[in-house]
Length: 381
Ligand code: BGC
Image 1 (cartoon, helix red, strand yellow):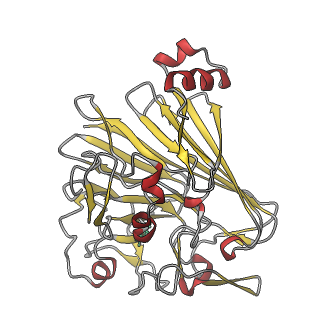
Image 2 (cartoon, protein in one colour):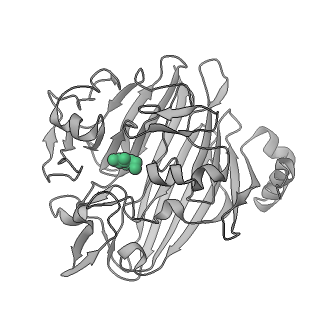
């Protein structure tokens, strides 16, 4: 059964303690049904509105950003996130085979762990290999395929949706019960803020991120190669042919990975540099300059004037130019997604950190709280 949006808004408004009339002009949050899993589990979709032309639609399935409407330079809002209009799209064989993780929360470990194993405190943990011999994005059934419990939260800057998931000890090979909360906030200023928090009852490793594919010209409008991107990183982590870091931190200088000044995504995407060949384009972790909360990247789309800035407290940013999209998937607007039709900027710790003692640590111990925030800010130029 679909809950009518207006009624859902009223319900959510009352949950938030906000009178329904106030939510019409300011930030809004509404809930509706979004189908059910084969076992009958109901999935919901929450729509968080900024009151200034931005709307994020988030599913309890995978904590997925299903769509993201932001205004263009003429003030017209349009969807800039790749995804599907129905739950079936996310459950289809085509999607789970191609596994692009559209919009999903990624855990317990974003990106790859080499050889699908790691050692912690002298004990070796084996993970299911789901990317050649490696483990990718948390394994066969990662956080992207879990159902999250949702709570709308009143927030002074906007509206938030707090999602929780308790990952049992040993799930997908990882030690410790991991209690995870991810809070999406849409602010009045058109920011999408994502706060990741987790605790464990045994030593473990954690690296959480979000896998939204952006196309600032509009979802389904073709490739993103004319977008200009600047990344605040003078180094990156080179990879081997299976996309596992070699352990080195290399300078971007003189390579197609130098985005310290803006370049279009397409300008050097066919460069024969070995790293580009390994990634089939950009699929690299950039070592962000600076510490604490900092500007990681800025992207502009000439056709629409949309600008996205990414800020994070994480040390790394995976810039993935959608190289493995094959044209098999048909998205929300009814067009198929081909290579390059969206790009990801995944804030993270470096891939394979559990096997690279020289990288910043991803170990989480009982008594500690994993707490990290990334912000995607939208404006126009
Ligand atoms: C990885 C890619 C992978 C993609 C979709 C990205 O985060 O870096 O190698 O193909 O996710 O799974």
